[in-house]
Image (cartoon, rainbow, N blue to C red; front, side):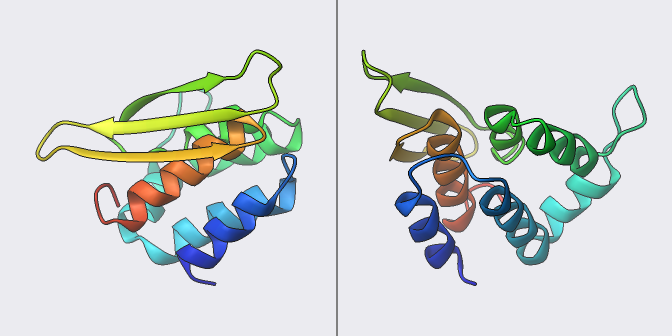
Length: 127
């Protein structure tokens, strides 16, 4: 599945979905050596790899935390929500070594972060 196809699936989603987040993680691991190295070799104080943390997050429904693990290194951002929490916008960006931005709208904060992170990586700005 291409990044564009995966982004289309994420944009069509109406709620956070464990299998969709797992598909996105798998896509990143298969298409980016840098991401795969980060996901499989970075270990936290508890002995968990980043992939281990991701799996725990999606197992308990902590989708925003799982989505944040997909944001490229060196990128920062924010999520803005409508008053009724029905609409969420994620804006990611970086200023070094070049200015770059990624933007996404979705029905949940986690989906918005996930889409923006994929866009940032797909553009080659943070793989």
